[in-house]
Length: 92
Image (tube, rainbow, N blue to C red; front, side, top):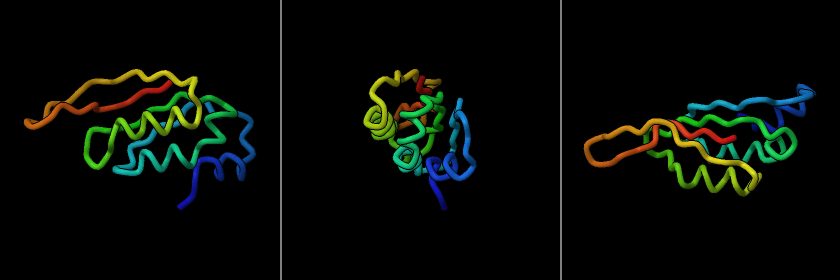
């Protein structure tokens, strides 16, 4: 296991335009491991949040802690019978 920040550094990427993830319960950890990349390149972010244990609120807070200039755009919602959940979060 590694972080986005480590991958960007190891590969010497000159830019990062988008980060997309569907990593079942690790969305917040993904953002925490990409803080330097988010601040340096401000890529668009797409995170799948349709299934627990993903917590859209925690993910949103983690993105804003990394770079407060991000704006949230909520994707479609799912009705599971007991709750309504965001299917995808987009940050720009």
